[in-house]
Length: 340
Image (cartoon, rainbow, N blue to C red):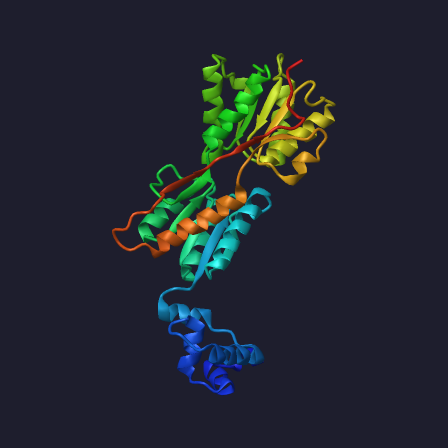
């Protein structure tokens, strides 16, 4: 057993020359303690490398001051910035964060939730994968949960996402205003709310312009680089290929760019490209990529703050906001231009 594990609150009290109740008051901020006594306690804790047993405290208080975060793909650069927003807000509020990756698999997601429940976290932030049963689990367990980015259709409260309908609409309007009519969309997995909503915004803008939405210009399905490569190859083989392509996911975008480069298709001279999610490397591509930017850090921060309200809510209390929708920004760069 390590030396740290051997030390107890009684050891801290003895070294600091105070009672164990004073040490407890310092740790829990339950009653005021003079600055001098508090310093002696903190110095003793540092000297002994003493850390309170969070599990034992959680069993006693019914709270662990920890939350779980489950994301579908930590290799997707969108989610680390969201998690950073969560962690910064959680740290300020005195909460620890346990991070899990479901790898876009519903069974993995369920297993992570079971683990987090068993560890008695106070709440969970979840970006669900396709075929998720998490909403039913939350309702059955009456467990504090906020859905982030990907929102179950049945969710009646506790959701934070971008305004993805507006995102799809703004992106399409930009291409229409440049003069494009043959616009393709790699819509991603439309069983997931962000991609479904972006496609809805695309349809709305096209219908307002009285332009047909051609089936051969739509690609729905998975979200990986290879899917972007395959979809682009199919589009390039059409008799009348699109003059602009909207891409609903950053991994799909990489596949699109790779396919265009391999086929020596100049951007935007022959085809304009517009992506969703604006990462720092988008400005360093040649050409730089016109993108819809989401407030990823803000999404994480607001998600934790909403979860905190739900965790502290008393019976009968209403949430100030049940559903938070964050504005998006169209960032114009060099990958979009008029059709030739």
